[in-house]
Length: 392
Image (cartoon, rainbow, N blue to C red; front, side, top):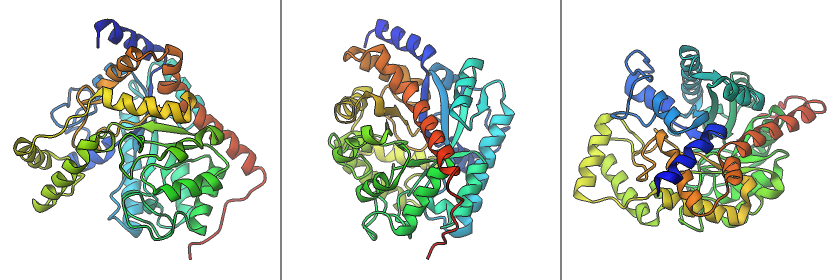
């Protein structure tokens, strides 16, 4: 791409910065530093250990970040709840520690205010319904603490919902799973359908009264991975008003990377590491494997291929970006870390995307979907009490 396209991309991001749907910095800080912000200074360049620091967020044109308050899906019961609370506590501590950089955002208006102040809006999304331990009261508590989306599953099935990467048990959502969706609508918490099975996606779209999101998923028609979105689901987004936020994870965007990553994950497990671990020790194991088995490489153009397809099926008003930085061991060339967003925007400019459409992709669609969910919640709260349905 030319320097002219990059200059245009950076100028666009100054007026319509990226609202990124998913960044796993909180878990990376838990794993690498026990949440110690004195040990890892995010005002300094941390590229040797993280995809994220404030300098690179600014260089990437990020204006709002959904921090994932994720816990692994092998955490269960109250352990999952407690660990999620620790993640929430870290994000709130991070935001309070760096008020010149971050502003806690609970609403769409807060996001706009942060941009006007020159700060990055700091939001939270919980990744995986295991974190609520089958309790709608816990869901409500997370919302009060600032969580603004819940990814219905992570990599494993729940007692009330099927995951994309587990053997189907329920055929989508159970009756309790449908109640979770309805209570999220009442709260104004976005229903996130990344990680869920295609049947769970379809069930949630049937039940929801508010727009949904996919916080970090790409197009299954372009890369046939179960974590991606089938075309029939993408085609429902205009009717629902939701937003699909393309992700950068190589095994979800590049078909050649799917098998390679499965083999690399098996190697990690053989050496005693969780496949999702990104500590320096785990990455050394990954890099040793990569040296012996060269990795298929995705690029910004690979991600743009997904966006071209998603735009064709869902329309420009239903697209966003969710990089999954600090939640993946490998990233595409040109999208190496949070400073890379201008490369993707430049690639799309080179393909003829208008600046108005790119502003929808980066900023306007994501802000609108949260605002719409808030409006639905106001209407529902006027006629519906908090659900007391218990899991059974």
